[in-house]
Length: 107
Image: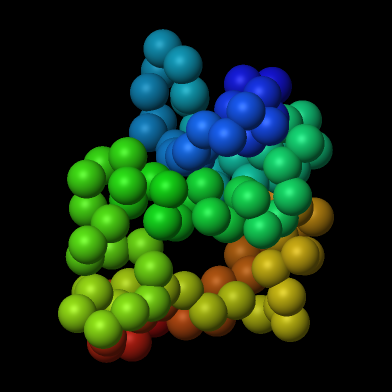
Protein backbone atom coordinates (compact mmCIF):
# COMPACT_ATOMS: atom_id res chain seq x y z
CA UNK A 1 0.00 0.00 0.00
CA UNK A 2 3.00 2.36 0.20
CA UNK A 3 2.66 3.10 -3.51
CA UNK A 4 -0.98 4.04 -3.04
CA UNK A 5 -0.24 6.29 -0.07
CA UNK A 6 2.64 7.87 -1.93
CA UNK A 7 0.39 8.63 -4.89
CA UNK A 8 -2.37 10.20 -2.83
CA UNK A 9 0.17 12.37 -1.03
CA UNK A 10 1.83 13.56 -4.24
CA UNK A 11 4.99 11.45 -4.13
CA UNK A 12 6.68 10.07 -7.23
CA UNK A 13 6.35 6.27 -7.12
CA UNK A 14 8.76 4.05 -9.06
CA UNK A 15 8.18 0.34 -9.75
CA UNK A 16 11.13 -1.94 -10.48
CA UNK A 17 12.07 -5.60 -10.22
CA UNK A 18 15.57 -5.96 -8.83
CA UNK A 19 15.40 -9.72 -8.15
CA UNK A 20 16.63 -9.11 -4.62
CA UNK A 21 16.28 -12.26 -2.47
CA UNK A 22 15.78 -10.08 0.60
CA UNK A 23 12.75 -8.15 -0.60
CA UNK A 24 11.76 -9.00 -4.18
CA UNK A 25 12.46 -12.54 -5.31
CA UNK A 26 10.88 -12.07 -8.73
CA UNK A 27 12.01 -10.53 -12.00
CA UNK A 28 8.50 -10.64 -13.48
CA UNK A 29 7.40 -7.22 -14.72
CA UNK A 30 3.86 -8.47 -15.54
CA UNK A 31 3.49 -9.83 -12.00
CA UNK A 32 4.66 -6.58 -10.41
CA UNK A 33 2.38 -4.60 -12.75
CA UNK A 34 -0.63 -6.69 -11.69
CA UNK A 35 0.28 -6.40 -8.00
CA UNK A 36 0.61 -2.62 -8.33
CA UNK A 37 -2.83 -2.34 -9.93
CA UNK A 38 -4.65 -4.88 -7.77
CA UNK A 39 -3.06 -4.51 -4.32
CA UNK A 40 -1.64 -0.98 -4.43
CA UNK A 41 -4.74 0.47 -6.10
CA UNK A 42 -2.68 2.01 -8.90
CA UNK A 43 -4.41 2.62 -12.21
CA UNK A 44 -2.75 1.12 -15.31
CA UNK A 45 -1.70 4.68 -16.25
CA UNK A 46 -0.02 5.19 -12.87
CA UNK A 47 1.72 1.81 -13.09
CA UNK A 48 3.07 2.52 -16.61
CA UNK A 49 4.37 5.89 -15.41
CA UNK A 50 5.92 4.27 -12.31
CA UNK A 51 7.67 1.61 -14.44
CA UNK A 52 8.98 4.06 -17.03
CA UNK A 53 9.75 7.73 -16.44
CA UNK A 54 9.45 7.62 -12.64
CA UNK A 55 11.98 4.77 -12.47
CA UNK A 56 14.32 6.72 -14.73
CA UNK A 57 13.98 9.76 -12.46
CA UNK A 58 14.79 7.60 -9.42
CA UNK A 59 17.97 6.40 -11.17
CA UNK A 60 18.95 9.88 -12.37
CA UNK A 61 18.60 8.77 -16.02
CA UNK A 62 15.40 10.53 -17.12
CA UNK A 63 17.37 12.60 -19.63
CA UNK A 64 18.20 9.48 -21.67
CA UNK A 65 15.70 6.67 -20.98
CA UNK A 66 12.10 5.63 -20.28
CA UNK A 67 10.14 8.10 -22.35
CA UNK A 68 9.84 8.78 -26.07
CA UNK A 69 11.56 12.05 -26.94
CA UNK A 70 14.24 13.50 -29.22
CA UNK A 71 17.72 12.64 -27.95
CA UNK A 72 16.65 9.67 -25.85
CA UNK A 73 17.78 6.09 -26.49
CA UNK A 74 14.60 4.84 -28.16
CA UNK A 75 14.21 1.70 -26.06
CA UNK A 76 10.69 0.25 -26.01
CA UNK A 77 8.53 -2.82 -26.34
CA UNK A 78 5.49 -3.24 -28.55
CA UNK A 79 2.77 -5.44 -27.10
CA UNK A 80 0.15 -7.66 -28.76
CA UNK A 81 -2.79 -5.91 -27.08
CA UNK A 82 -4.59 -2.78 -28.26
CA UNK A 83 -4.20 -0.95 -24.94
CA UNK A 84 -2.01 -0.80 -21.84
CA UNK A 85 -5.23 -1.25 -19.85
CA UNK A 86 -4.99 -5.01 -20.53
CA UNK A 87 -1.62 -5.29 -18.74
CA UNK A 88 -2.84 -6.13 -15.20
CA UNK A 89 -4.74 -9.15 -16.54
CA UNK A 90 -1.95 -10.96 -18.43
CA UNK A 91 0.38 -12.07 -15.67
CA UNK A 92 1.46 -15.45 -17.08
CA UNK A 93 1.49 -14.64 -20.77
CA UNK A 94 4.19 -13.42 -23.12
CA UNK A 95 2.52 -10.47 -24.82
CA UNK A 96 5.68 -8.88 -26.24
CA UNK A 97 5.53 -8.47 -30.01
CA UNK A 98 8.74 -6.48 -30.61
CA UNK A 99 11.68 -5.21 -28.58
CA UNK A 100 13.42 -2.04 -29.75
CA UNK A 101 16.77 -1.01 -28.27
CA UNK A 102 18.42 2.28 -29.26
CA UNK A 103 16.00 2.52 -32.18
CA UNK A 104 16.80 -0.95 -33.59
CA UNK A 105 14.35 -3.88 -33.58
CA UNK A 106 16.13 -6.74 -31.78
CA UNK A 107 13.19 -9.16 -31.34
